[in-house]
Length: 498
Ligand SMILES: *Cc1c(COP(=O)(O)O)cnc(C)c1O
Image (cartoon, rainbow, N blue to C red; front, side, top):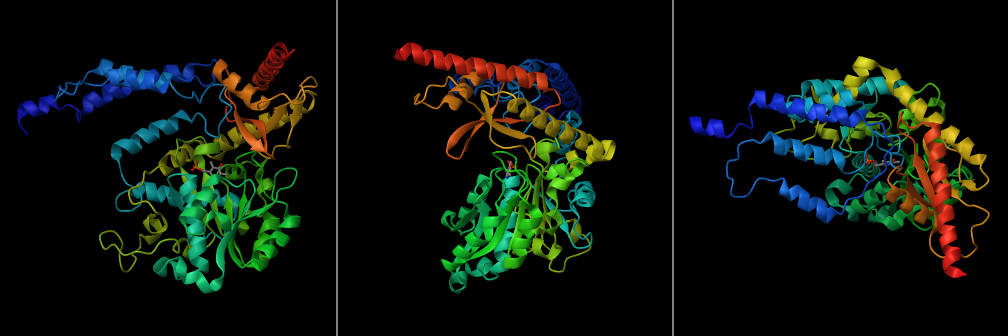
């Protein structure tokens, strides 16, 4: 490289890196210090695009000299737009502010760029996977010599991978011969809760099972799978020629955070010869809490378990863990030859190579964010956060129960609470979706961000408690706002219709 080129391309200069990292970190410090409750402020995407384009170098500037002001402006715009997950008002989604130190370790991940599927490329990350598997299994309870774990980029991919392993376990020829290989064995099907996450439907579509072959198990009043009705539904499916091979339980459903009765479902799975998959993306983190672990009783009987650390363990997303009770079943998901990465005779590193158990080839070593926090703080950091979120949720539930103009829908198992505002003066037959209108008006007001969900065909409001910054006082203020907006909608209706 000529000297002039070196000067023009300063992008790899360590000193410049350091300068800009400091700049970004100082902006992040201010961002994290901002304690005002904030909801979601929606900016017109076309205007935002225009603004973003205005910050780019001109196409004619072929070799731009780095302009730190431009960089600063872009980072500032990033911080100003989109959801602010650290504020007390952020109560709408299952993601939240991370433990900021995990962001620092993620910066290290990005700079060292070790693809973590292979031990030789990412040695410490693969060792960290091994350690975290053991650490978390203390609370799951699989046989420690039998189980295994692999990380994936997100819980959806973890669920897909687990179902793939389950499918290949039952229908051994499908991997080579395709779905035609199960022609004589009945139509492959899976059993899921009415409230199962949509990644299950995607997995059914992707794996050639088909959405129509998802046998829906009814839920009880708390929206947990009704085990009293499950066997009848499975028998009916079999009578229709379906070959159900997997039963999927949720530990923390997405709509209401319900934890299915895992022990009883394990009995049903066992009696019917089914692979039991527990989708613990949301709620498996309750296992690290002494107060809440018992809610997941029976989880050690699952054949596979998914666990999102980017939800209730507050590490940057994605960081998903897929556990298998038996190591050999983890290898059922994928079969292929690729001499450039896979050895014919597995060496001593096999247990430390995620590659054979995971779809991804190049994979971010996101386990480092979780492991380093675990290494420096230990379990209690996570247990405290889980305990706080669940306690606030049950306090909010009790508060709602005391308010006659609000309707509760379920008693919360985790940190998600769904409810409706239903005052006595709500006009019967008022057109439109009252709950949805409240939620939309609340969003545009910009102090609190909550979500909505359909329960029994009707919209409900949904709060997800993730922040230590959110207190019961904030919940009270939010409910007051909901009441105010609801009454305003009713008044408007009367004015326009009388
Ligand atoms: C969030 C969630 C998923 C999907 O996980 P991602 O990491 O978002 O892909 C699946 N199942 C449940 C129950 C979830 O809460």
